Image 1 (cartoon, rainbow, N blue to C red):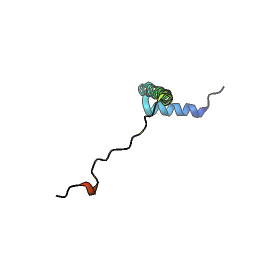
Image 2: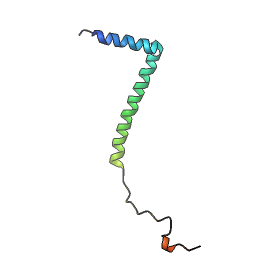
Image 3: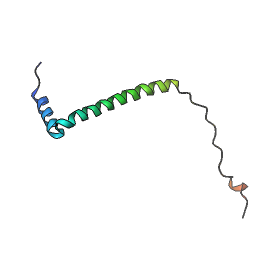
Image 4: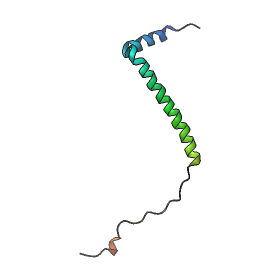
Length: 72
């Protein structure tokens, strides 16, 4: 399989923009991001199947209605 020339150009541009020292840090950060995303998706699937939704209760009024208020 022949390595296409446009991939070589892209790699050279990335090397020039980020430098040799930044590329491993960039790749490490991308790997951690993908790993975190996968763990989050796996965790979301587990919690959805195990989540129990409690029944909702009507909210209690915080103020008395206008006709029950004392005149000042």
